[in-house]
Amino acid sequence: NPTVPIGAITRFDAALFDGQWEVVETAGGDWDLRSFTVTDTSTVWQGVNTGALTQRAPGILQITYADGRARDIWIVWIDPDHQTAANGAPDGRFGFVATRPGLAREDQIEAARQVLDFNGYRTDTWEVVP
Image 1 (spheres, helix red, strand yellow):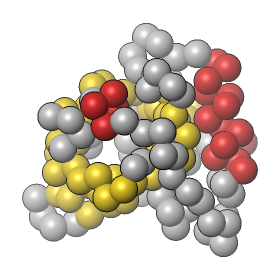
Image 2: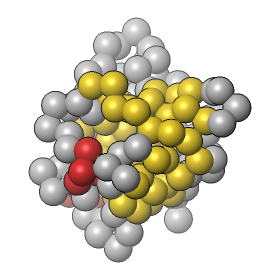
Image 3: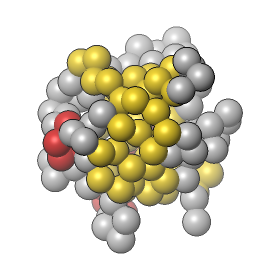
Image 4: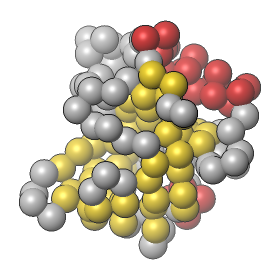
């Protein structure tokens, strides 16, 4: 629901966000994201395409691709150990839940869903990524 305002989490720590992530649930849409890696203290994004990652504010990231396209990602919620993250776009066009490989915990995934739902997403319609 793009009329519901969302906010990013201020607990976000760029150094802890670095590393490999797997998408476990997604709204789908125009971004077929299955996994991504963040490196160099959150300055490089490697997903479907590689881009420069800029932290615009705590929990608010922008990916800029070589062709000039840019995409904002807001970290809406992240657990204290940065193992599970609820991510979305401020306009509601896409969202996803990501976990560290091999560290998916159902309680944290459910917490991510609840925060996303509170922020206007409808995670009950999302695709579970195998």
